[in-house]
Image 1 (spheres, rainbow, N blue to C red):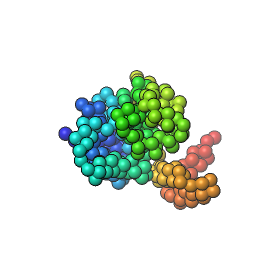
Image 2: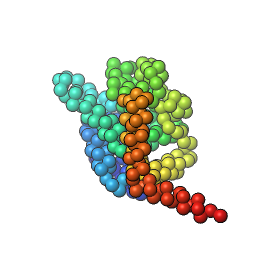
Image 3: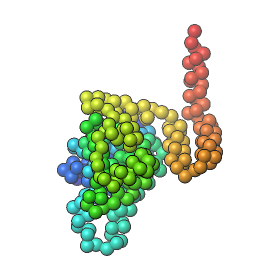
Image 4: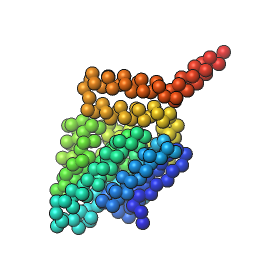
Length: 256
C-alpha cells in the first residue's frame, strides 16, 4: 500500500499521509514518496494550491520508532540518508511556489508537527494537538526547530522542545504556531472554502508572494525593501495584474 496518496480536483492537489494504522508515522520510504508527490504537484500547471493531511484519526505522530530501532546498529551513512530524506521534503515544500496548507486533525507530534509547520498555512481542527516530545526518548527535534523558531520565537520554541509539553489547537493559535482553529462541525466546509480561495487567486501573484515571503528570512531591512521593489515590478508586468486592474476599474466605472 502506498504511504502517500495524491488526488487532484478543482485546481487543488490533495496529499494524504496514508499510514493510519501507524498514526501516519514517518519513515524514509514515506518521506521519499512525499517528496516525489510534492515535486509532482509543484510542476503540475493544473494545480494552484496543495493540501496536506493524514488519513485516520491523526495528522502525523512523528518518526516511525520501529523503523529507527531497526537502524540502531547501522552506520552513520544510513542514518544520514534517512534524515536527509525528510530534510528534502522540508526544502521542497518551501521551494514550491504554490500555497501548501496543512489540514490537521488529531495529533501532530515531533516530525509531524514539523511537517505541518513546513506548510504555508495550518488549519487545525479544534481537537488537534501539537507537540515536540523527542527529548523524552533521547532524540532531538533537529530539523523542525528551524521552522519552529521562525513561527513562535526563540523562548517559546525552546520551551516546547525542552519540556515536550503538548499544545491544544487554541494554545497553538495563541503562540502563532498555526493559522486558524476551526470548530468540528464546520471543519470540512470551511477548510475547503479557504483552500478554494487560494486556488482561485492569480497564480503569478501567489508565486511571487510565496517566493518573496521566505526570501525575507535572509535579508536585512534595506535588502527586504529592495527585494519588495523587485517583486512589485515583476507583478506589475504580468497579465494577471493587468487583467485584475482593468476588471476592478471597469467594475467601478459601471457603478451608477
